[in-house]
Image 1 (tube, rainbow, N blue to C red):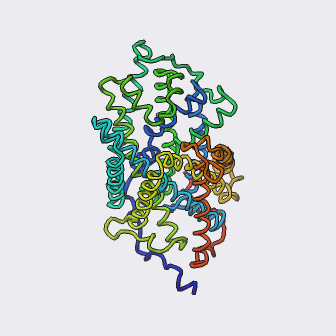
Image 2 (cartoon, rainbow, N blue to C red):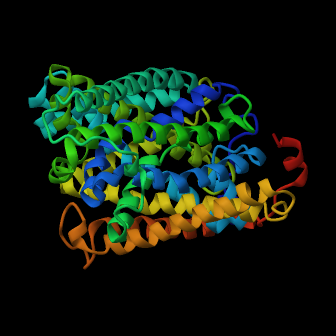
Length: 499
């Protein structure tokens, strides 16, 4: 009976289009997946409210676990170029149960965030072009948000090359707008022409321990969120030229370039606005840029609004990529029904899994929005649980999979073993801290109690329980995937792919 139900997987000739994009395209997609302008706008106010002028230092400290996990992605991709990334690697290193849960976490991050990103893209574009009335109209905004998700999903399906071209345009627009904002803000600080309580920048702001205590922990949780998404480049590994090393290098460089971008903008914002103004308006989150845009740019405020819009627009598309490629990879290994592994015969993209991600994301967005807008924001807060989980799992899997190679050289020991383990440990600690923080309903956007705890934690637990139930059901219906056993990296692959 099990053999009849178990899916056969996609036909052997079905594959993603190889060499569709190059290193720079993958790098841009990794950058855009993090939504830099939107991310820094969303957290700068809350971080300043917690640590004051040391906000740039928190962003620097948050970069450390990301870089260590990026190293794990690089070395795991060198020996296994599978678009399922964490799912595939954790399955090989730690077995199918852990691998399936890692894949589920990645897929659900896309579902949770795509609708919100598209909503922000629509809202800020309407503000940038002066259609404030449309931006304030919930019905208009929701219709445009759904249409935008459908359009960006279609771009993902039509082809990776098209996606890369769109992303290249969006990153140029976003970075140009952000740099213009940062340069003008810093110029006005030093020229003493600012309209707010400006503060002269100091290198001491880079001290992440300046504030210390509980405020540091809470701010680090926010800091980690702004780097999430860089691994989208590695999910395209089967479609990137030089697939053994280019996607991993793109992931590592994405985190470094993000650090530079975040520090530049953080210094500019804190210096121009001052800590009191940012702390007082922390609840505005991404709309802090809407408030600052007119202060800094005057009649050119649309430049900053456009930066946030293009940032969220780009991330709407790129966030679909990891979830859809993970679904494809899981279907190929019989961990999901076969139709999720279908590849479009013309476009050579995983069309079924891509549309499924979009469809569920739209449903999640509409349902949560009609519950309350705060409930939608609470679902974004729950993201940190999933992110910390699958990043930490990847760091651990790297050390486990390479365990027989770690003593061969100092580089192997530190970059493949110790570094990823430290990154995993830091993220596991942040995961525990997140759970403790989210258990208090007062720390949620809704400010209400669901089952005695905060809504974000309820959402996180609900997603985890749903994943375990689906995994157990599929284990009974199609046990083929669960016959896989953990292994170690093939020494020949390590020797043959070192660079």
